[in-house]
Length: 432
Image (cartoon, rainbow, N blue to C red):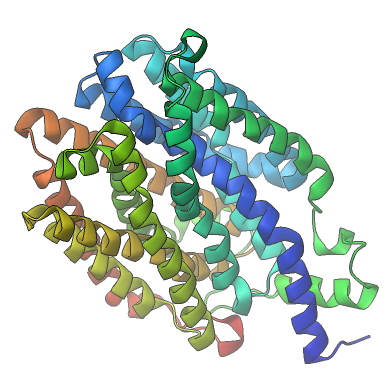
């Protein structure tokens, strides 16, 4: 039994409302648990006498273990299914994040950040793969972008939430930064338990869809039209040069993303000479721009079916604005440049992830997503570490901002000239 185009649109809409708001909520707390160290940075550096290099190293260590454990974590997900795996790892990383108040030395700081990265390693690539089970390629950029808007929304929510928790400083003799980790870690444990009841594994298991709807959605999501056919084996993902091109681009995106996310309150405190709580509150502003840009860019990318030039434009805008944020002497112009940078970096996500997920399938898709995200995770280490090391050596972040801009611009050029590597798929696949 076939279903009409109107029924197909209704099915996608029903899937969207069934999955995206919940997955969005999960990612808000996942992202908050990895970057809340940025909100606590001002207090931790002062109270524990951490240098900028110690803080940058610890903040970035999350991403080294994340990269190390990501491929095996994603392959485990294929074995046990997303519902049980996501429930398990959310509960574990919530417990680890809630243990951050135990930090008292650089060694304990490094250990807990490393463990947190290992626990979270399977979440993002697992969700990206999970979305390919539920959304046909022509709807995928918007679905991915709306899910990933959580990273920016976590900044909007996280800034006032973190400010309120930091304001509890001294309550029951507990430092404000310790309240922050407790208050933002416990919700992940609770949500991990809810996942077991809330998620459905695949369209074929969705009793909330009619049989004909399940059959259509299963067929639509299994057709990954692309110019290059890949056998569904991890080794073929590793051997495919496109995987490494995408990995390079995502590395650059993550260097920029986490340079901003994990240092933003410190940058704003230096710019505006604000209090700790004032700097955390100001960090909401760039995230507002990031949310708007992510939604508008992904919507236009899906509407036109064009991915490559959307991605190039976002990378160039981010590179230029990061450089300008260092060159401007006016705090207002500098924060305006940081807002454009946030819009450019987050705007990359929809068009970027629509490319590899449309071109690969099965174990190749799982392996490719994990490899790309693992290399990106290394960028998550390099960005914060570079910011901290440069600050200690030069007492300024300018050199790190310039280096990040060059990296982003280089990868923008790589994407611009990669047309010869990519055979343009059919319009039905949603990729150009």
